[in-house]
Image (cartoon, rainbow, N blue to C red):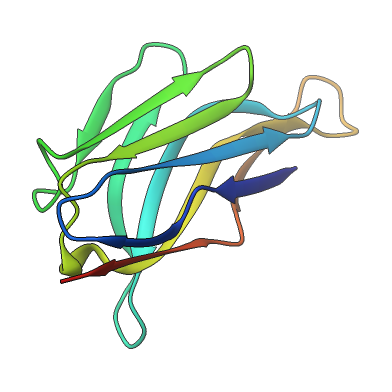
Length: 125
């Protein structure tokens, strides 16, 4: 299973960006995906998460109303639309997929959490 993020960049405060994360891996069944971010020297924090099939979402208080997570199940892709960006949104943004994949044992699956490599978002004043 691989996750590939894209869409980061350097923008001015008040601007918008859209991050994308594509999941590949034909035997992996996704149950939930999320975006997390991390500043150097700080803990990684959850930004937004969504369940894969019923679009139940939750957001960090700091981004609620400005960021929107969505997914395209046909493309195995999750997006993070970020509006009204602030300098404090500057971080490395990671995509995470949670789900299962089959094992060699019949009717037994294993749970996986898979992370992408991160995409950098920098917001200037």
